[in-house]
Length: 308
Ligand code: NAP
Image 1 (spheres, rainbow, N blue to C red):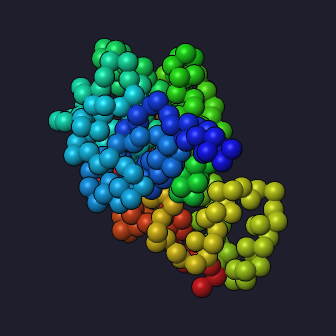
Image 2: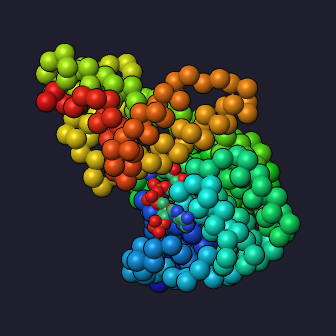
Image 3: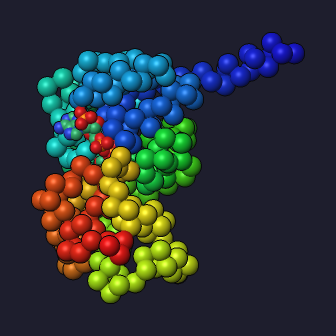
């Protein structure tokens, strides 16, 4: 009995797909751990090798280059900073795409532009590979716990092939349209995140200047109708001026906001709020806060947050 159950569990944990993960930052690192723990044979590569080595304890195979990680993989996932980083890992010297097996699935989960995604998807098709843009919602904790929300852009049959693999890192998987639709929605999504965080930063500056008790104000915000998960998440950091151990780097929020503004222009939408938010993030970056959590934007508003 016990033996049969053991066999069943072992069979459940054996998956056919071999995964390669390129980029093991806050998000890619968490995703790789979830694939490993759910039994997917996983090769990992990161520009800074130490982050890859840290995953050997989880059973990861560390590759020296993106190409080496990709060579034997059925599903190759990039989770890197921006368009330039994505271009580098897929198409640069020792890039993954030239080494991918025809028939492998190419997946980019980075927050990048739809233009780059469509260019990459065309190159994947030339290689005989399927393509999915699969950017994610949720931050460090969701990535670590396999609870991300995915916004996938793909042809339906390609998306269905990838769905079980995404299920290992996500609690919700949305197929939002053809290739590029995931990237497009993610930029609209993050434009709203950027504006919410900027609005909280400006509110906290006024709170401080007006002399309110910061703890009382925190309670008012918590109890309000506008307190989103984003607002709730960033409020304690702004109150404590705590931007260390970031959940989401301020520089990446600036990048997303700029990408959203550019994309809106190509869609014929003249955004007003997002460019203003981008100015605040850029000011914070100039203050040296780019590598800290995005909540550090509070420091660029010109008044200390938290009622100090
Ligand atoms: P992160 O911790 O800063 O990691 C960035 C990753 O990109 C690292 O692996 C980094 O390598 C790599 N990288 C940067 N430039 C590169 C280049 N030129 N060539 C190769 N690799 C390069 O960022 P993250 O939070 O994991 O974010 C990854 C992506 O997910 C971004 O597009 C971000 O906007 C998006 N995202 C983040 C969150 C979040 O809450 N954190 C949520 C949703 C989506 P090194 O280790 O060598 O620096």
